[in-house]
Length: 312
Length: 312
Image (cartoon, rainbow over all chains, first blue to last red):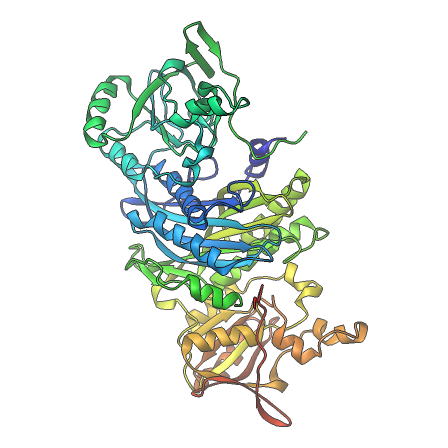
């Protein structure tokens, strides 16, 4: 049983009232609380020492990452983050200055979007630091983008460059909130997800929610400089394309849009976000499954994304 | 530096917008999102193996406790719980059936109030199970009760019986949501808190928020059967009164009300909740500090509540 099978098992038959527009299985839960034109977005995400960061990472970056991961999920639904609660589970021995540094990072990450930190709690986790963020946001009902909604023939886009995040980007990325909101206003995506488990894994999540397949063009996939350089210094590093397909924690947006709007989008994007790459990496198909097309033709891609555990 | 000093340090200068009606330092954060007559309540709470439960405790009770603790905080503000997200941090080796049991307990705890479980996440915490709940609720603006608001001369009330929770109640208590809402509708408390750190500790939180003091009547404090029996079988057990004052995890309501309404409240309570004790245990005073009055007279009570850690 792997992580996703366990989640499926646990989220069967969960109690839900009519206010739940989207429950488990998307980037955020989407709730209708009676606000006239907006839904509430609700998300939690945890980072754990030894799993998502090391004891040696700068405290500010640990806090920054914890908050930015959650913000990235709000971005994936084209929402506005508003309020956060912080759960700090502290090891037996800790340095208060380290925890202050973590908080500093939390504040820095939320500041560009005026995220209010409204409390939280401290508890004990004897062996290691664990940091969990609960985040609220809102999204215009007309602009909420889900994982479900991709249509056969859609063009598939990704922001930024992929792979090699663990060399540094995973602690220092800017969540794509502004970009996602601009998209929702100007080129509403049919479906969207943020890349946390790796392109191949997260694309599968989007395809499963949308009940369709996709074909990726290997030569189009934007590979980060880090992923391209790693094999030169580390003989056991993944080949760059494989890194771009399977490394986690890119925190870029993956979305689909009608093919007829692709050129207009690319033009408008270049004007609005000249510093950030936007790439069409393939298309959505009727046939379930994931196909990779390269110079040797088209083959099924069996690669999956990152899972925290897999049990036999 | 103890837990509360660290929290004070971390929660200085937190970024907050006008939508934040109550930030850190109460049972829940209180947010004004633009709903006509209601505030949103927002709360997180975590339980950790070896701290809040043991590896041997029944999984259903672990899940039940995790959810019920959060519900108790919503009760303390006279709110209605609505939606929850579950963060499961799983040890390297875990039994999926145990985790299913935990989820069963989560559902059972939320069921009486139709709490929707709208997702969450699973991650790794290599050494032990950690379970964090993020909970939303709503409260009528006119009925929201805070820790601040107690007035000199108020009578001080507590529901249920106190002490000895670790012998079983901490895994199996009913959060006082119905009772709190009935109070808010019929006898609006001036200030309220739920008892998680022990009477002496939580009363101090309420007094600090309300900028006043209190006098407790030792003979009135309702001591649980468990706290009374423990010294008979365990020579190192606390004397019963001390247990009632300082044991954590009672999850009862502590609140204040104008003295003139005390008799009417006790009469009406007995009719509405005949199974649940309600006791006047003292009064609010002008003078800061906590006084215990017993047959030998009145003395300052130096006792504090449970803290997760204290660092020199």
